[in-house]
Length: 138
Image (cartoon, rainbow, N blue to C red; front, side):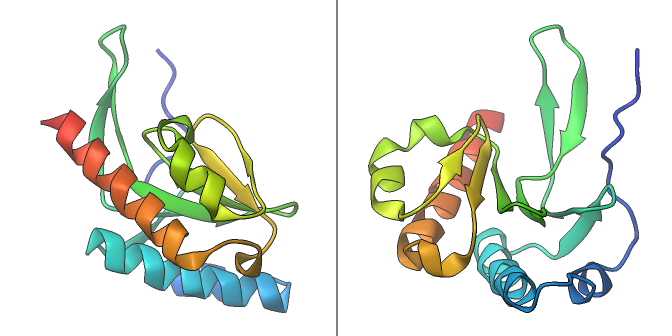
């Protein structure tokens, strides 16, 4: 079975974020860092070369294969800030409707910049998804 390529590393989160070229994207990343630290009560860690993750949990596929993954996280991609809402964003339609300008994937929330979204709603989305993920893991 293939090994998971994205695993937690010992690279510096602060160094990674300080190297984000775009000033606004870098400021948004540091704001997301604080939002997610407060929500998870966990220190950030690099996962792979470009994801800042918080906390960890065991995820089991239907096949029985299990892996360790972060509870929530983000990555400053070229096109968008990508936020990882691990339980899936479709579970939160009322919050998503209030969030502001964004796109979604199954567990990904894509935003251009934080000023495009309602920060209190974003904080609620992150906290609710964490609570649901922890509850499901029990």
